[in-house]
Image (cartoon, rainbow, N blue to C red; front, side, top):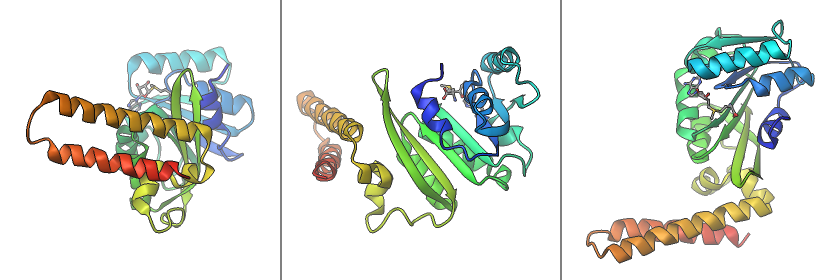
Length: 231
Ligand code: SAM
């Protein structure tokens, strides 16, 4: 059975897409998407030999070899320039996701939708989208096995549209997630706030001097979180 996290990624694949799932590991996502008619065909990209072999095995096992091609390579380099119409990149840090998109820009010619699921550092992905003409058109936050995940969905469009006046807050919290103000969103930012408070305590306990700038930075991050958590 597919994880809820990947199921929520899959739900945003437009029908009839040619999907590229980059960093596919077991290729669970493309197998699920093709099996359930969410897309017609898919490419699973993997850069590491072990996961690449796992993907090949899984595709063979599900008998989807004629619909899913497993390719070995770094990021989007496994794609032809005008190949995929929907690209999913899930289960990695936001910085890695952004760098995969940045170095693979030339392969995004036909892409109409990006579905990105950063484990951490979602702000980094939002920035990349803004700088590259992608409009965030939806976001999800969910909790599974004690971890909180964010999913960002983007299309070509006006990248600043969702942000309104306070772009910086939008980048950090996610304009849609902030608007939805779900219990999991609240939980995530309460935990972040606690985390920052603990760091401040540790700074204070260390008794070292010259930590004032760091301390003030954390303090201001905490007050931004408090402001957002007021709803
Ligand atoms: N996408 C799957 C998921 O969400 O469950 C697998 C996530 S797994 C934690 C991350 C995978 O990305 C690993 O299998 C890793 O080998 C692969 N990966 C990391 N950097 C990559 C890159 N530059 N190009 C292709 N795959 C990459």
